[in-house]
Length: 156
Image (cartoon, rainbow, N blue to C red):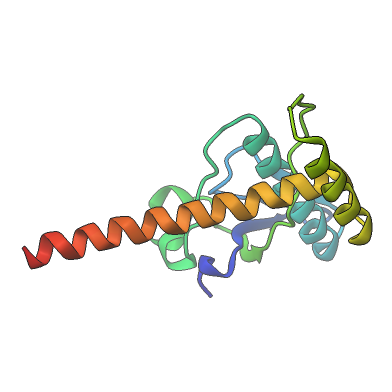
């Protein structure tokens, strides 16, 4: 199993009575529970919250490594004794929202409010979604321009 599945490898240890999990690719993120099942659930919550906190703080989210890369890392491998690897997929946790003050044309705002109501969303939710879509389009266009320039350089 590779990390490309969207998960982080967690290392589970047991002292015979309790279980603990740590994530080499998310230093400082740990959890503990009485059963293996509970430590995996609690570990998922801990990992999800840890990554959301890092995102909210503007920290770089560490990319998850593959199981092969982790087991080849001497530092990670030295902690494995008596433990087992488990792939944990964090749930998406939204970062806290900021209140902003914007100027917008009144007719456009009425249309946005009507669209939000029709879709069962808030005004803020609709605007946030529209921003995400617009930014994804801009990112795609930038990628297309870079690819086009690279092709032009190769053919020149």
